[in-house]
Structure formats: structure tokens, C-alpha cells
Amino acid sequence: MDNLDQLRSDLLTSVEEATDLKALDEVRVSALGKKGAISGLMKGLGGMDPEQRKATGQALNLVKNEIAEAIERRKETLADAELDARLAEERIDVSLPVREEPQGSIHPLSQTIDEVVAIFGEMGFTVAEGPDIEVDWYNFGALNIPPEHPARQEHDTFYLPNETEDGQRTVLRTHTSPVQIRTMLKQKPPIRVICPGRTYRCDYDATHSPMFNQVEGLVIDEKTHMGHLKGCLIDFCRAYFGTDDLPVRFRPSYFPFTEPSAEVDIGCTREGGEFKIGHGDDWLEILGSGMVNPAVLENCGIDSTKYQGFAFGVGLERLAMLKYGIPDLRTFYESDLRWLKHYGFAALDVPSMTGGLSR
Image 1: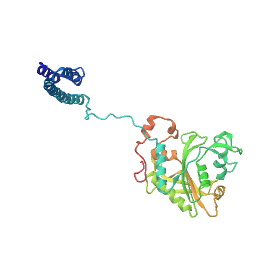
Image 2: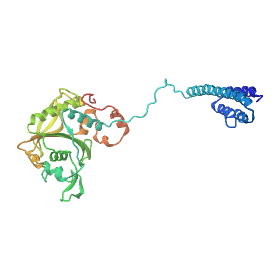
Image 3: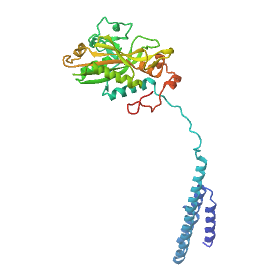
Image 4: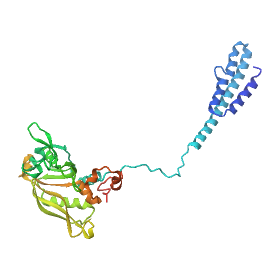
């Protein structure tokens, strides 16, 4: 106890000389721990007489509190210094250019589907979907396609070996028209749907693929007529190609499931060997359409004396090729990253009629 002042001085010096938090904690343990210097002196108070114990106890408590406060002050100083060192060592130089990470692209076919859905969505159409594997009746029979029609031949269509319980052949759908049939069977008029999806035919060249995508449309109610069909498709063509005065014409044609039927052409020019959509002396066929054949309505349980409507269909790859200048349909499915980088779209370039379509 005679050396208490010296002990106090030594401990304060040790606290100030601690260079990091670990060293400071070692000083704390040596002074205030269970086996520390001050703790050891506190244990000796029991052998003193009351007066001496009181005076010595007060002195020890003052030294103990002073050492504890000194340790806390030194701890804050060391913690601040340690933080400053970390900030200086780990800081980011924000003046450096941003590292460009590889970014994915939206496939032009996906972009085209979004654009088509956006345009027809503004016209009040909803999207309907159906299975890729169909039975003969949905794909052909209900659509008024006769047994001898070329589309039913195996050189044009992918038939599957299994049959349904009632003996019907199964087929990879050749168009999305079966979705129209399923919609009319499940939903009572009025009907206004588009049917995008994959289709399959035995073709393979620069403008055909064994698998391709179509979008078909169907409108059924009591008052729709050919004028509505023409207005709808003219508005669609002009919105999709971004040309307000795009020439559009309708040529008489034949489809088993529509009567009357019409091919839809858009104006274009091929002067100087350069193809361009818009005004010109030439025409390009892009889709088929017509008023729904009454036989198709009756096949779906819809009274053809009360209801009528129109339908249309177009290849989505064809639309993309025309709009974005893609020369070969087969490249859509070759998974060439160079091609996708050239024709792809930014991930946030989402088409909408309010935000705008791609150009």
C-alpha cells in the first residue's frame, strides 16, 4: 500500500503507451482483472483494522476509477485511429471509370412479341394460350379444314405416334388457330383475343423454320364486320412499322376457316436493289385474314345466325425480319451471341404504346 502512488503512475503510463486495442485490453486485465494489481490490493483490505480499511479502500477506489476512466479515453482514441486507418486503406477511388459488366440482351423475337401485345392490348385484346401438342380435331377439323387438304399431309405436318382415346391423331400444332377454337368453346361472345405462340411445320430455308412463332387474333360479337377487320389491321400495321400513312391493301384469298378471306399487303419499294417499307410502287404480303366461317362458329357451339367476327394471323419472325432488317429466319435459333449483340435490345427497353415501340 505504501507504493500506491507509484502503481497509479505506472498503470497510467501503460495505458497511454498502449498502441492498439489489444494492448490496451492487456493493461486493463493486469490492473482491474480478477488477478490484477488493484484487485489484489482490494483483497488485502480484509486484514486491516476498520479505520485503516476505510482510508485505504477509498484510496484504492479513487485509483481504480481513475485507471478505468483513462482506459476508456484511450480506447476511444485508439478506436478512432483504427477506423481512420481502415478508411484510408480501404477507400474507393470514385474518380475511376465504372467497370462495364457484360449485359444480357432481349432477343428480337421476344421484343416483337411484346410490341405486338402492346399494340393489340391498346385495342382491347387479351392474350390466350394453348398447348403445343394438339389433336386433329382442334388443329384441323373444327377449323373446317377437309381431310384432303394439303396441310393434313405428313410432308407438311409433324404427326406424333400416339393417339387419343377416341382414336384421333396428335400433332404439333401448325398454327395457333386451335387456341381460337378452345377459347370459343370455353367463353361466350363477345370475344376479343390474340393467340401468340410456337407453331411447327416441315419447312426449312431462309424464310421458313420447322419451328416458328405466330400471333393470331379473333373477334366475335353480334355486330363486327369486314370494315372492323380492315380498320384493326391497318391500325396495327401502321403502329408496328411506325408509319402513320403506310399503304395497306386487302386482296381476296381463300382459307377454309374464314369467308370471305383476304391477304393483307403493305406498300414498299425495291428501287436500286434496296428494300424499304413505306410508299412505293410495290407491295409485300405480310398476313392473312377474313371473316370467321359460320361452320367454324357452329363447330364451337356458337349460333352463326346471331354472332359473327373476324380472324387473322401473322408470323412473328416475319414481322421482326421486316422491321429490323434481319435477312435469314434461321439465325433466330442459332444462339449466336454476336448476332444477338447486334440485333438484341436492352433489358429495360420494354415496348408500350405510352412509352413507345422500338424503331
